[in-house]
Amino acid sequence: MLVCLNGHKINDRFKTCPDKNLKYCNICGKETIIRCEHCNSYIQGKQLDQFVQTSSTPLLKSYCHNCGEPYPWTTIDKASKDKAEDFEFNQIGIDVVFNKLHTVAKQLLIRYNDRETIKINDEYDVQDLMYSLLKMYYLDIRAEEWNPSYAGRSTRSDFLLKNEEIVIEVKKTNKNLKDKKIGEQLIIDIEKYQAHPNCKKLYCFIYDPEEFIINPAGLIGDLEKPKREIEVKIIIKPER
Image: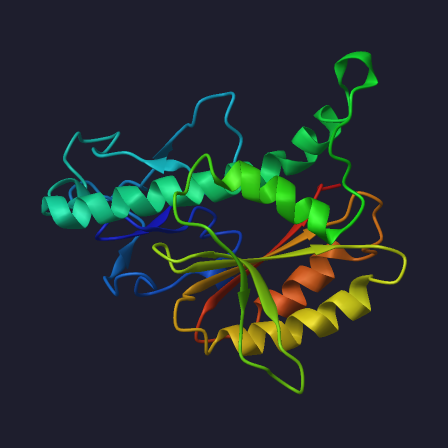
């Protein structure tokens, strides 16, 4: 696992996905390492609870599994350690929401005696459900944050987590909104978000239950690959 000296995880697949490797942390600027500084063993993570499935990297251990010596982030000052732990919790919260939204949407359709429920028919329904799930992890969620116009149109960021400096944009595919059109919209939006004063990381969540996206990997690669002022993550759910 590639980790910075302050304990921010950078890449848990540093061998198979070297394009994600960084020499310095993009959160705090500290140097990154992959081995214990005492015995040179590779840094390992610890497993999450079996009932919590996330797409993030494993949680960090505090001590080396091979020699028992503390990793650098174990001995940092409390303020820096608290910041790293907050980042870890925030990442897990986002991953759980993204990974479980489709499961929750399906479960809501099964109600006693066919009572009324929320059905995910359009983008606004996805927003409502995501907002409810995000409230389990975040207190300050600002919805419908309108942004300055870009390329002749104004754009709305669906959710702003101001304290975490994260923006989440939600899309739902349909027969008129597939790979090409979604890609074109997000390219414009991503450029615009770089000027957002409270956005350090942008998540573009694409809900695609009918599988209108023909090439998910290609769309993700095209949108994430360019280097930008902000970090961009494209999430397409459910996975197939």
